[in-house]
Image (tube, rainbow, N blue to C red; front, side, top):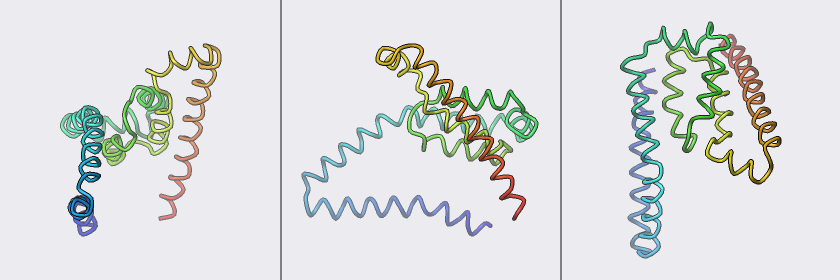
Length: 173
């Protein structure tokens, strides 16, 4: 298992070297477009960096102050309604690209969070609080409330199905 984890740790460095190598080669082929691509990359990074910092802070907080017992209590097998509420509400409140949340969700999963709750969190992310007023202005309050309700119900149902499928897969191992 350690060899697999060591390779996983090296994968990021290998990918970084490949990207840097490709940028280097492309710079010699077409310097202007390569510099434009780098500017666009840094623009995206500036947009994502604040969210990334929040997620890193949350991960540090999780690793420092929250142990497996508390995760299992709030997001584990015995979490019940409270776990579903945390997952759905947390998904609605979360912002930024989904992949930024993956490391934190992986840590929660390692500490005992249910797979179904993680799925529900990711599904509920499709509701964006800042966009709700705009949606109301285009589609009306009734449409927005009904759609939001159905997205949350869908997140719940998908979480249940995914949890059952993952539990069956774990039993088969």
